[in-house]
Length: 217
Image (cartoon, rainbow, N blue to C red):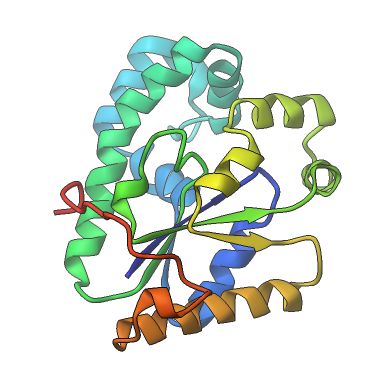
């Protein structure tokens, strides 16, 4: 089973993903995967240097991600160019992970899951949500000033729309224990379904949908 986990910036996707990992799900953080595997490939680095020069590289030779972020978040054409460069590499890595462990349960953090129409990669989608004031407060606690936080939030699909599109919603306005109870309920429901219980008989699980997996094949 492969779950796609998304949500608003600062809503607690990583916390929710760790709770799934405690229930034996293999966890992929897309941001880390991009940072450690995609942006370190020779082909990607060569194209970045060709387009932006040495200004987006550190003295170590690694990509200067904050410098690159300033470019792509201020210019949509640059963001689209970067996505077209990096996404094929990202998907190839992800596909290799899935093929290498057939039958494993996965939870994949994907901030732009719906923005990039990636629903068909996953058996179910989940959205982590919280109220807007809590969202901004958490981002400021991370050192992101409010103006930059609002700018980055504006580049994503509205949280209300992500909630509508998701199979499950995890509310992260309370304690970690409250979030854990929601994760446990979802995992238990899905495990019962895997064991043969009809999905429609369980109110915690949505009715079956057409989940085309040709992109993962």
